[in-house]
Length: 174
Image (cartoon, rainbow, N blue to C red; front, side, top):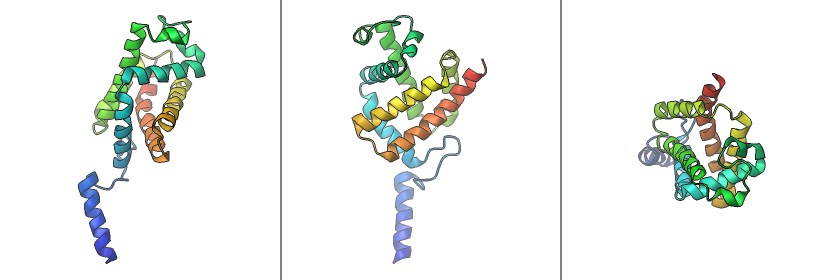
């Protein structure tokens, strides 16, 4: 009986997940389950990319005020004035779009890597700790707003590690 249940579970996993849901991709470090969790939660964040992206940046500016100075059009502006700056909204949408491209192309890491590498070229003045803080803010948002569990947080942590590697390599070359 155990053999039959075990065999049925293996068949179910193959059909449902396309293989072992815990098997990690060598390029991304993500399992099939991780990718599922990331895509599922991303759909909720990307449903309103400007609003949700703006919230991430505002939280970043509160945590590390110097990061607001990276944006000439909003340097020194109070929070309530940020939402009316269209050039900043465009940057927020660009940020969210890059994350969307990375999430939706997780099955093609050979595309995500150069995308993130190129993104690093345009962010040479930003230090690793700024990206790390933004990651912590994103993970906090997932916990607070989406009530994400540890499995989701761990999947997103692995995802951010994957996309940051080529980004930091690009920045380090400068």
